[in-house]
Length: 110
Image 1 (cartoon, rainbow, N blue to C red):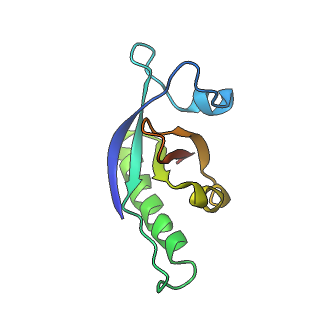
Image 2 (image 1 turned 60 degrees about the horizontal axis):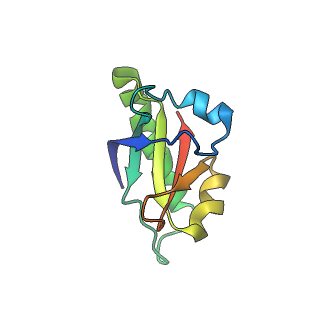
Image 3 (image 1 turned 90 degrees about the vertical axis):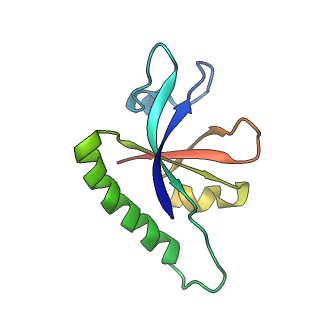
């Protein structure tokens, strides 16, 4: 897995739940929210059950440290359609498709 910071453009007509929008700390001029990006989280049929959840726990531990130093509080990941229920089960919320329409952007707050 990799962790980085990634700007997320939030269109005014996004349809995102107002409670989530309020937490996103969106810049009023640009419509951009700062977020950590959880990337390269890969799965394998050979990995033991629960391994993905363990990786996410490690990521959250690192992000807690980063949050205290940098202040960003939103974590985003991009996933394929079939993984939405998995990430929703871990507390992530779907916010939109990416610009190409190929991946789903999901967020959780730290």
